[in-house]
Image (cartoon, rainbow, N blue to C red; front, side, top):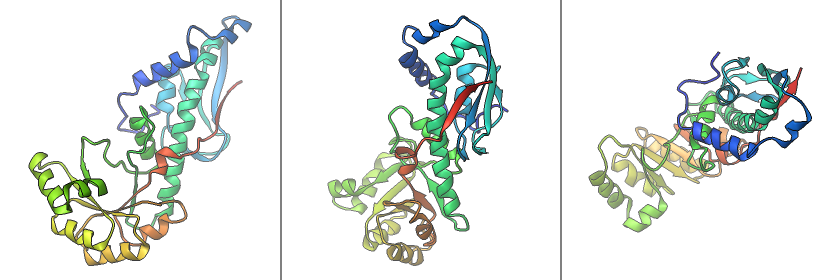
Length: 274
């Protein structure tokens, strides 16, 4: 076991180093109560969920750590995630940083998995958004994949999305799309956010790659999918675990959920000495 779910995220190493420096500073004062001595320990899930962040913890403690669960695997309360035997001072100095990453990322993966399960039997796929914590985007989006979700664009640079303010600034969807196509590569995808069926018809007529149905009623979403069967649709706005199944049943292809990354509760995980 490596801990990671392929493909591994990139660029997280400086963040991990910063987190350690933030916590340890010039040294762990409480470590003065004992000498350097080896201690056996384990990291354990305290609730049911989907784990994410094992690779981060392994990088933090070292390759000698025994990996019991890989990222993306379901766990139960009492499931052992990692085991090891290291210097006591080292373990306690690194404990909180490891748990902070594990608990948050596993929380994102667990919430994502709940949404994924809620739309099973439909063609809808659960996707994330750019509503991520600063500095944590790559890891949060990785955790979404651990939970069975799919990533939307990483940032403003890898896909174009024309939203309501773009439309207002340009004057129309048609003009916004025309200007975009003159300025970006033909390889870049274009998505257009629509608030009503008139806008959907305009965007569909322009042959954009994805049409977002923003805060539309179930009835309007179903009509859009029926009237424009060749269009790829994404539903967005007001999506939660109570509404997502009904949205999926309209026939949309994707459902974006900001809560996956901005509101996921942490999965309780702790470290204990044997």
